[in-house]
Image (cartoon, rainbow, N blue to C red; front, side, top):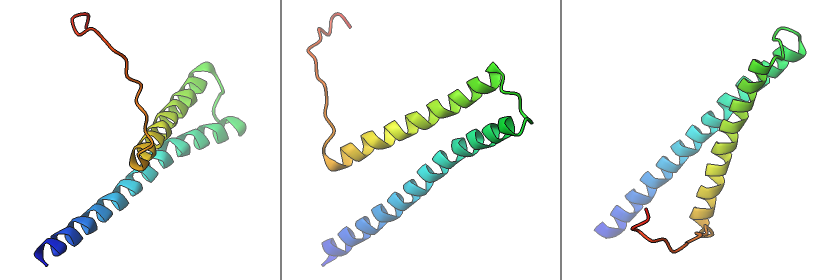
Length: 95
């Protein structure tokens, strides 16, 4: 019975951690989206000049979002056991 209680506690803690993790991911995705939206709206309204510097800033935010989404995809594959590894033989002396 004690082992079952410990298992139930561990599962509950894992569920809480997962919920917090999802909330953190949501926040991490919302922030760059809000920045991109604000800059684009400013450009459309003529408040912000669409010069190369501004476009680079938008591009950096999009790259950040892409990395986050790619990481989430890899993690979801890992959770499902569908993550594949590309292994090559390497000579350790060359490294």
